[in-house]
Length: 300
Image (cartoon, rainbow, N blue to C red; front, side, top):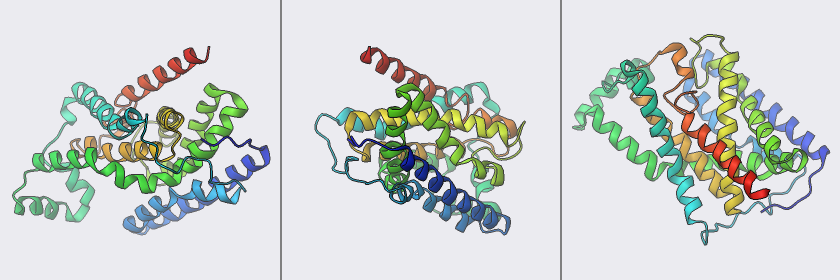
């Protein structure tokens, strides 16, 4: 893995570029949403995932040494965890959430109709025309999210992982120590998304107590935990593709609980049903803490 010694100058350059470019793009996304351009706004969000990659280059750092060659020997468990671990923990967290808030569990397709807007009814009719019930659609979507979506999502997630895990996290761990470095890195990763949370209600909507500050803080808890996951598999594998797969896996798995949850749940969205909620995210938070404890004990 990357053994380069880092400089404060390059770190400052990286942080300036990664925030300036991404936040300008987030303003553009907000403008698209304000004018009914949800589709181009969502496309720009995907493109934005490559900003950390670009910021590494603009800061004067190199991409070599980040572990571009796939390394499967001795890393099969890390690969399996990266691929399937997020989905398993997401389903566990969703099960806990819906066990508490049973009235929010919904298999009628209401969430699909809400997401599709004016075309919602047509979307459900399309499923029926294919001979599929909404429950069958959910099962197919779940299988897709677990089996092959992590690999597809990896190609977008690698843009972030090069910047966060390939460059920023090693810098912060070198400067502040492992624990503080992971905490600071997770906070930076969360803050990077803050304009979207405030402008378009990214991840949590806008109908919750303390909008948007509460959502911003809760999201940072999630990015700290997920950052620990990605860092652990990166350290174990020495391959940047592993955290990219894990990142892609969580992005895929998170779509499933939303599909079976009633829309417009207001402040409950801060709690779940996806892992960036405080209740549904408990499996991730607990495992992240266990990772830190185990690593701390090994280093003693």
